[in-house]
Image (cartoon, rainbow, N blue to C red):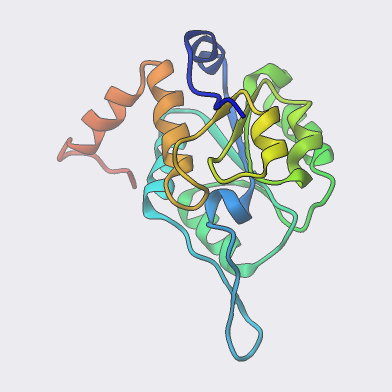
Amino acid sequence: MQERRMDESLRERLKKVRLVILDVDGVLTDGRIVMDEDGKELRFFDVKDGFGVRAMIEMGVSVAVISGRAAPCVARRLEGLGVRDVYQGVREKRKPFAELLDKHGLEPEEVLFVADDVYDLPLFGEVGVKVAVSDATEEVRRAADWVTKRPGGRGAVREVAEALLAAKDLWRRVLEKLHDERREDDL
């Protein structure tokens, strides 16, 4: 399978993106679910991905999550990152997608979706930019406009954030803001 990398036409489409939708298991996490002795589920999140989410929000790009599974630790992590639009325990992802378009006054081409598994394919047909993490299933990689170099839960979301914000000429502002001693945000 030929790998889909960033090209100039994709950079142009990224400039139009105003909303990034993320899956959780396999995108924000590495897909593993750890269960303790009491059956409590735990997930692994990468701080680099968290920084990417915060940077997008800080630069005015909305971030939403639509996940097929629900877990309290996911809700806490997303709340800490400032993600307000969170849909957990949702198998049919097109319904919350339609709600998000309406809520934010967006057209489908202004939305980027990062996915990893076949459950995500129906929504792929709806969005403007389809991104697969590097360790996504073959079907998802084949349907994607772009496949990240980094795997899910290990920097893929940060890679998307950097590329998106760079295409919008905002990544430099993120770095400047990060190094500004007077800043009062959570970057």
